[in-house]
Length: 138
Image 1 (cartoon, rainbow, N blue to C red):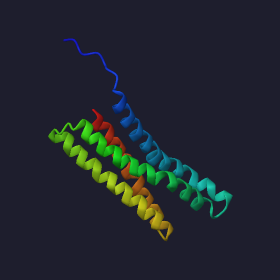
Image 2 (cartoon, one colour):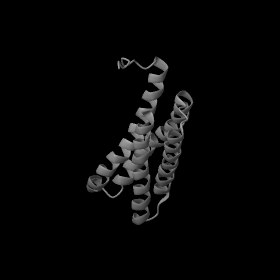
Image 3 (tube, rainbow, N blue to C red):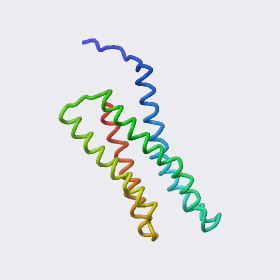
Image 4 (cartoon, rainbow, N blue to C red):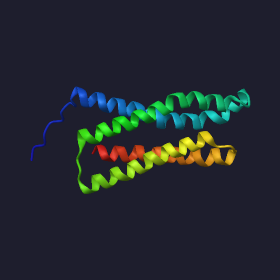
């Protein structure tokens, strides 16, 4: 049986997916980068980790918003709607919301334990949402 040759994505689909992937690289990749920078930044002074976190937040939250908007756009554009696909989408959305909640609570934390817990919740949920998005793309 012959399979169809791969085709290029349309310009609009390419734009939509590029925005979504770019926002994910900032949101998820930025969290991974911050994980690696926080410890060494302490050598620069006690306030350095907080300064880095504030700078990251100025990029991260707009990226999270863009992920939400382009995610809705993706659902409308793809709309596969099969039972398994819809179930995975629902799970992905739950982890996306948990990632945002964890990150938000991390910004409001008042102790090192809270920072660690909510940072971990936000980071792990972000990576899970990213992985589920890969599966949804089929």
